[in-house]
Length: 613
Image (tube, rainbow, N blue to C red; front, top):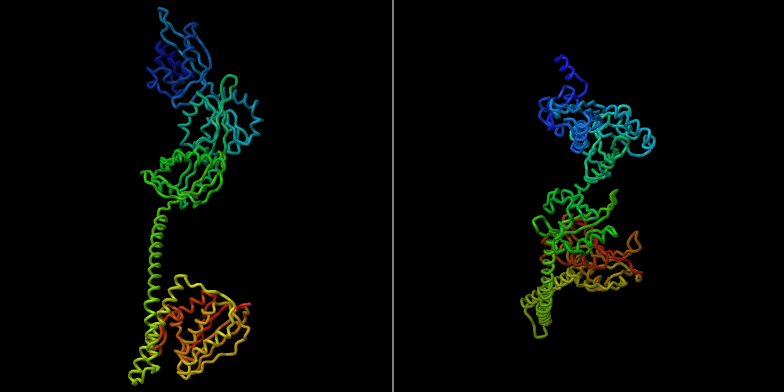
């Protein structure tokens, strides 16, 4: 009989547990091991509060024992906890056992797992009340009972998770979670059921669901409770945010690839997002910036007034580009300051308006600007020195040179008596060298004035014919001395160009002078005519039959102090500035100089100017 009694106790389908008056477990049968997950050795000597009674239900457990002590036995339904933290519904009967003296020696509890029955009851109840309505809402709705079993699963949840409704009712909610989260979720879920609160969507939680095929996807979940007959249910509204997460990832990728530091701030001035450039620029790791007030990146002397500026921007958020005339400073983690440019732009999100700040370190630019300022000041000083030098040269060099040239001219006129042949030759050399030096000085002064922008040409309608006649008349003696015909083609008296009279004459004089100088046989021809195919332009050309200019020399023909061609032809004459000055003058008059040349046949220089009405 004793063996049969022991067999019945061990093989009973219900958990049989005996505790002493102090609550320590004295007996724990096989069903108790199976239902609650504790082995006998783990249970003996421990209290039920330590093992299977949730802390918030300790009073309910004590009440069952008091009633059993008073009435001999007590019965009721209760929630108990397994070793893994999950909850289950049990039907429990507690009986007080007394010794010969009438004192309670043990409390014997029989606990039957009625979780499946409660699931059926709760599911039937919420289905009748809420299923039709909740199938119409846009979010997935999953309702669980106090033990974490699914009792309602709407049509949107079926579409989202891929499970049919019958396949999930009565199953733990963890079946809809990725495997790696299930163990911890049992405890979280049990704690929520025992101490419920409303949790809206959108808190900073990284949550994931798992579809029937095993695919994971990001979700937002709001939690709330429903009080029904016999217990409390937890309702979760679940939203698939895969598209939003994809968009956010693209946005974050864009932020990370941005060349500037990017900081996104919420309405309270707290930093919500930063990119890698922000970490590098300010020296903070991302974890030390997120959630901090934006003033952490602002020098302390600006802290009192910065929140007001921030509030004013949020009141009327508008894009503010970089370089808006503000001298801004940023503060690094080590306390050092850096000059920055900041652009601000509002971002409209589901959670409200955010502000995106693009921050650019302009330290190098400021350094370059300072260096440029120093350089400009040095150049200004150099320009003043050059102007002073030019004024001195104009007076101190040209005055004695003009006296020398004039005096040698008087001597060569033999007004003071006859000259020997050697004297006349040497005086001619003095006069020629003086004129050459004076020409060089004049060219240098003209070039300096042009380069410094101090030459102001007065453009007006200038008739070509008188200018060309004067040039030809001036150079005719030089051409005759070389026995070269200097020809002027007929010019239309009405042909006029938009030019500075003196500048026009100087250019044509330089071109014709060069043509005579470098032509030993043949002729030099000057002409002016309307440009072929363009009635708005005029070509003033000087054509010679000289040696011509090579292709290599054409590329450097207009460079300052450059003389091209055979050195024997130049005979040391000229400064190499005539063509350079001519091109500069042509540019100032809105024109240009073209050149064509053939070795052995000659060259043609053409001044192209706008035709005057």
